[in-house]
Image (cartoon, rainbow, N blue to C red):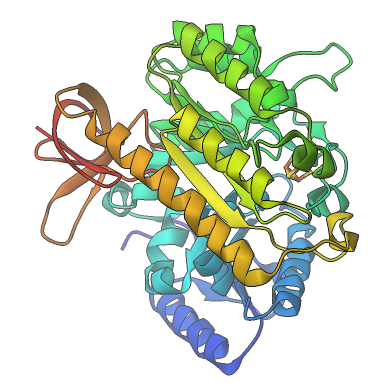
Length: 429
Ligand code: SF4
């Protein structure tokens, strides 16, 4: 291996003895690959927090450790990388990636054996070119555009943990995007707790639409995608930009969370089913063929059978392409945790499953309806048997499935005709 630099790594282990074993395994693999293990996190260029999330308090301890590590010198600038491994990425998956923007990589327990490839991808100057090419995550990268949140949804602790909303300056975002493209990224996913507000806190206010169109013009061969747009962040300017730039994915992820006006108000969120229906009709009119994803919380305190039925009707009415549903989870320290009309756990789980069943049936149909259509697919990797797979613009990383393709090189964007689907997965020729 042509190692141009020895990278120092510190592993912080939370939780049980099993985690210690897993950390030892990662240490051995990294040492064998030429990484230098260090005792002190301050000496490291990469800090791995091997998390535990067995119970709520363990999750909180792990989060605290992550935030402590995120405060180390060099983290803010990206010179030092934070990697979150273990139970939390395994348990919370993509949701964790959306909330913990400081982390450069998430390594669930099942992927810990790949720790060398993951770190090689984060330090590309260290690795052999072919190793970078074989690391699919390099081809699609998240770039954080702001931090914090001012919305104070009554169930959410993020504003208390991450502080008030602050947009990152364009130059910082541009530098991050350029660095990811230099590493091989063909798709940039812009993320934040509340992406739609980007720029409204600048002395000279700007907009997400302007940010996206500027990036899309500057990097015409790169796909741009934005996630986590609150309903209020959707403007005609943004929809216009989405419609007019080939390399901005016509994809919106709008966390509606509920449809009943009273429950939304108790969530400290604005809107109602009628308003949301109107908004979605407008989006579809302005950007025909747009892919829509959302998330809902079922079993929020005080949710009656009628409120829940309104949510189910809303899901049926909208025909979302993809839906994430979560039973309400009580988070200590939030206003909703103090509500005295909490719903029984079994009911919450049942309701979440019922919404998921409705949404899945619709998603299946919408994915199946793509048979015969032509899609550009970014080839991301291959299965053990050599079967290539990638993602189309209508599929966000990790949550919306993949397209299996028969020709192309990893990193290519190929045009395919969809000839079969299975749940969320598609196959193209
Ligand atoms: S759930 Fe609400 S408060 Fe929490 S990060 Fe999202 S918008 Fe902000």
